[in-house]
Length: 420
Ligand code: AMP
Image (cartoon, rainbow, N blue to C red; front, side, top):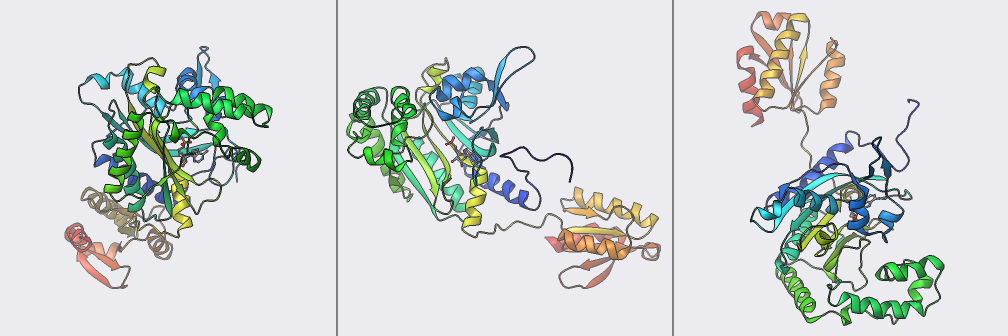
């Protein structure tokens, strides 16, 4: 062990488990790539203002959890705590929304940082795959988002997840509801901090996990009863499209989510095998965000799925992903000349698209064969001076144990054919 350890709340992705993370990332991205979403990558840090304005001063993410630092030049930056604000900032900056094709559909994957209290499933550095569809107001787009996330989870074999769905209203009906809710909440016995929350973000109080708070919330005005006709019709359409697509969901009128920018459709994917950190992904519509960060009106919808928690969900369901062995052929040279010749063979195999590895470090046969076994390779190519003098190599089938002499000149074609 070295003097150093990974910082609190973080962990390293190490082989062999890291292969699972890659596979999960790819499985989540696949339905997006198949549905018109293009890849975008933005910096790991942004101007702090982007998040305080975009995500909202009243959210825990911004007020308590952001990693903020000042550069030597005096600029205040923050490690990104989420992806949506950055992606929208980048799209606006590059005028992607003016290129004519709305919605602009983007997907991304990366690291996110929140100074949270670490526990199982909650880390200070975590990984998300996200999608944003910018510049269109259409219930079919909201439905598409949810259907694609559902498809991603199902393609991984996950079954024990549920989709929670709600509408948060829009700039017409939400303020009316907010007033009514604030009036109700002010009449309750609440602590100082929660009282402050009533002023800045009263909807979040509904989200309070404490039983003594939840007890008092019985009879609170519900947003559902305040939705304007346009929001109601929009939400009904999203629900019908999901039902039509065979995607089951649960109406959850208390689902408000932690970010300020959501309007209308909001949803969360929860997994029942994960304990208290059960949200594996979530998202919704954010029609006002663009204007909040100085852009034009651009109604949009998006989600982010957590890779770490999706891996935990796989483990909770006992799902083993069918990951192909990374190495198909392992080359074992015996002696100096064989080393040069087989290194050439390995390079040719790789060029031919065959995953191949090599016994480095001049190991003897026994040690090299042990490594060949560990690599999971289906075939091993062994050659010593005597084989090479005859223009041959030995091809060993690691499953059957059978060994065949093959002409050196034909080994690449022969191995490729056997693997195909
Ligand atoms: P949020 O932006 O909070 O809705 O997060 C979206 C998804 O990212 C969540 O559903 C989680 O899967 C994941 N996530 C958020 N925060 C964390 C964290 N601290 N540790 C691990 N995963 C997280």
